[in-house]
Image (tube, rainbow, N blue to C red):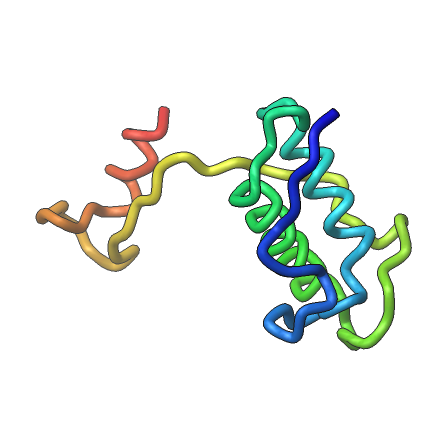
Length: 108
C-alpha cells in the first residue's frame, strides 16, 4: 500500500481556486495515471497534479467561486513535450527564434 502526500492540500491559498478544484484535480489525476502508475507517484507528482488541477479549474471557472460540474470539465486534452518560441510576423528564421511555418514543420 502506497502512502504519499503533497507538500500542501488543495485548499492552500497559493491556489487560485483553493478548495474548489476537486473535479479538475480528479481529471488531471486520471490523465496523469495514464502516463505513470499511481502506485509509483511521489510528492512531486502530487504537487504537479494539484497545480495543474488548479490551472484547469481557473481556466474554465467563470466566476471562480463555485465547484465545477462534471459537464463543465474539458473533453479534449493535449500534451506538449517541446516548447517553441518565435514571432508569427517573421519571414526568416533566425536563432533562437523561428517562423511559425518552420516551427510547424519541425513538429511534423
